[in-house]
Every structure is written in C-alpha cells, then in structure tokens.
Image 1 (cartoon, helix red, strand yellow):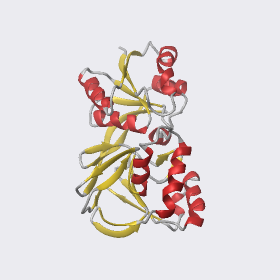
Image 2 (cartoon, helix red, strand yellow; image 1 turned 180 degrees about the vertical axis):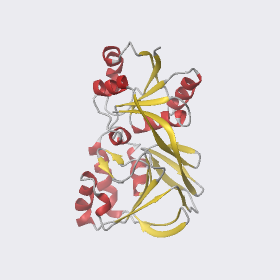
Image 3 (cartoon, one colour; image 1 turned 30 degrees about the horizontal axis):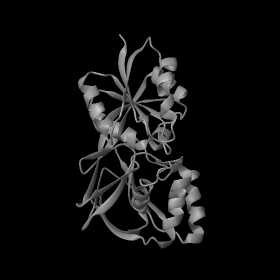
Length: 291
C-alpha cells in the first residue's frame, strides 16, 4: 500500500529553489511508494494549518519545502502526532536540515524521502510555542528582528546587520533557572538549542543532540571587537564552545526571568513575550525522515 504524502511549499521562501519543486517531485519521487499532492502556503504560518489538516486527512508524510521558518511552521502542526515530517530545504540558513544531514539539493532531498528512514527527535515548548531547532535572546533576537525587514535573503545581508549593530550593542543582564540551578549573568546572547545549527553551517551548540531529551543553553559574552573575527570563526570550525566567552549548560527545563517585553529569535522568526520564558523539552515527539 502506498503512503500518502503532501508537500507544503512556501512559494516565497529563501533563495527561490522552491519554484522547481513541482517538476522535481514528478521526476524524482518514487510513485511506486507514494501518492502525492502539493499545497502552497498563502499567508504567514499557513503551513501550520495545512499540516494539522493533513494529519486529520491521514497523510503519512508531510514534506516541509522552505526555510527554517517554514519548516518550524510544519513542526507546530505535526509534533506529538503519528505523521512523519520530511524536509526539502530551500531557505538561506537551513539550520535544521543541515543538522539532520539533509542535502540542499532538491533531487537528493527527494531521494532521501524515497528511502523512508525515520527517526524520532525532541521538540521544545516555549510558552506554548513549539520549535525543533534553536531559539535565542539578546543580540541574536535583535538581528532576527532587523533581518525580517530585509528583502534580500542569504548570509551576506545577515553578516552586514551583525557588523552594523555589534559595535554599539551593550550586553544585558539575565537571570535563568536551569533545571534547579539559578544562573545570573551578563550576555551578548543566549541560545536555547535543540540542534547544533544557527544555519549557514554555523554551529553554536556543537554538542547538542536532537534526541537526547536535553536542551543546550549557550551563554555567550561579548568579545572585544578585535577578537570578534577569531570568536566567530569558531562557529564554522564546530568548536564554538571552546571560546572563553562561551558557557554551555544542558537541561530539561529552563526559565528566563523577565520583567519587561523580551524578543526571541525562534528558528529565524522574531517574537516578543511579556512574561517569563519557560523552555521544556518534549522528548521523541516528532518523526522525521533522514539520510
């Protein structure tokens, strides 16, 4: 019996590769294994509604075609269900896809779907908002907010914003409860990582695992400007945690105490919260097709 598979495509995501998806699916998807349909999103977060509806309609596999934000919209509709998610990365950063070793080639990503190797990964509940990859506060959130206003995607405009805002950004005070331990610190930013990746093949949490039941809390102090290039290159060499400006903790639950509005970068999407931030791991709550 064939699996029912639905491709959810963000027609405006990332760098334009999604425009090739219909021809690629028809050419490379194994029709002996799958009956497929394609659905296009029409407004922000439409993918979540489509994913929920696809579960109700008994689709076996839902394929997120897009960038990190589009993929996380699908995660919100599929976590803690019997449906399986697959990914065809067409964004700019592609953090979760890179962490799962999913190729950036549409053809190769479809071949992985044909092989149907499924694992279960954790998801994270942040104040009733679900994500699968990474969230961040502080400078990370500021750049996500400003990046959302830029029409050009990719690493270069992202780097331009970092260099624009970094010299004048003042690191902030944070009070966290990491499991049962209180941490008070000044930080440039703090990442709450289920996966290793920021995106763009930069690893902020090189020892994070998607299925270990734990969140990697990465506290990053602000390096002096002359040392920024040296510190930043550690992201690409997969040893960011070796920096003296980085502390990493592992936890099942984390609370960030908050007395005012706080911005959060959740898988590339900027959101604001007016209450304490409470992160909790939901173990083995999402089925994903991997290489």
